[in-house]
Image (cartoon, rainbow, N blue to C red; front, side, top):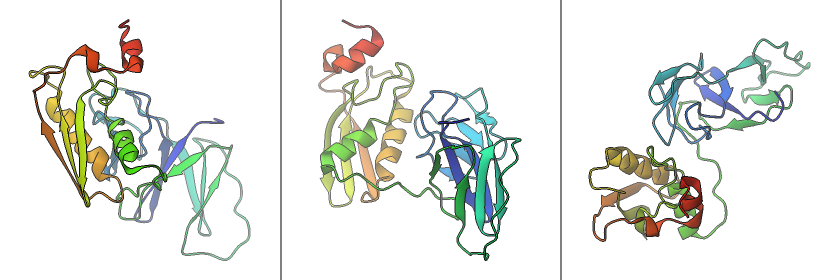
Length: 223
C-alpha cells in the first residue's frame, strides 16, 4: 500500500478514508464536492460512496479502495483495509483530531466538519496562471484532454472576486457542452479568492484543431 494516496474526509464526528484516485479517469478526487455521504469527481461527475467506495452514478463503474479508520484518544489512525492499526499512545484526549498514518500512506485531508471542501493553499503564482491551471482540471469527456490544451478557452478576465470566461466547444452540437461549462464554473469557484465564475459559450471564431497545444495533439495522435 506504500505510495498510494489516501483522501481523509471528516463529516461531523465521522471520518472516512478512500484512495484519492477516481476509478473512471485515474485523477485525484481531492477537489470534489462532498454531500450526502458521497464525493463527486470534479471532472466528469462520477460519484462514490465514502463509506463503501462503491460508484453511485456513471461514468464510474468500478469502486475505489477504502482504508481502515480508527479514532482513539483524539487521534485518527488510517491504514490499509483489514490491517491491524497501531495501538494508541498514552495521551490526554484532545478536541482536535490528529492524523496518524499507518504503512506510509500519504493522506490528502480536504474536508471540513460540515462536509464542505476546504481548498488546499493556493501556490504563490501569478493570478492568470492559477486561473488557467484551475481550468486545466476540466477534461473533455469525449476526447479526454483538458479544455485549455484543446484550445477551448478564448479569454479569462477578473473583476475583483468574479471571473469571466469565454470559451467554445469542438462542435456546436457537442453533447458534453453543459457538463464542460458547469465543471469549468466549479473549478474556478473552488479557488479561495473567487466568489463567482461566469462561463460564456461563443462559437465565433469556430474551434479548429490548430488551436490545440502540441501536448494535446500528441495525446490524440495528431502530428
